[in-house]
Amino acid sequence: MRILGAVLAGGESRRFGSDKAEAFLGGRRLIDHAAASIAPFCETVVIVGRKSGVPDRPAPGLGPLGGICGALTYGAEAGFEAVLTTACDVPDLPETLLSALAASPPAVAASLPVVGVWPTSLAGRLADYLESGSPRAMRAWCEAAGATMVAWPEPIRNINRPEDLR
Image 1 (cartoon, rainbow, N blue to C red):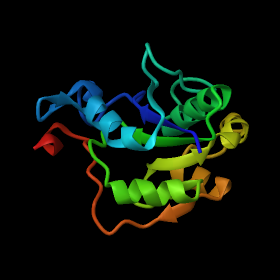
Image 2: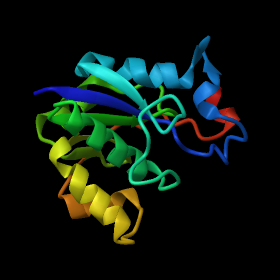
Image 3: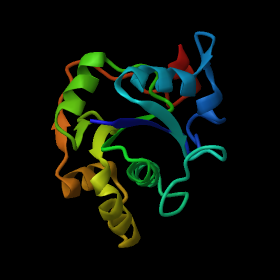
């Protein structure tokens, strides 16, 4: 299966106070950590929601679902069968979790559903969902898409505030 990796980076970083994708952790930007953590599972990795990356769909400002929709649309057009998503503020992911998600898409990490594997065939359905005014909550979309919620026994590191970098 051809899998596209997508780092969602279109958020406003309100809780962080500055562009957290550009914040440094261990001498490397958070966005670079996120891309590196999914790269072994993907043919290529794209950045979604930044000026120079894949655009959110159907429009900017729709939160993570707009980024996922953009990634799914791009992936479908490029001939990928699935998209592995993560957020720019998730610097590392366990390989065993990513393997579990890739085993049966759509599947997401139950504790952090922006981390997931989505069939690109869901692109149109997600665009329709977003345009219909349905709730923009990740869990609501996961339910609508029939995504498996994969429980993970350990916390997944998520950087939301500057103090989380410590």
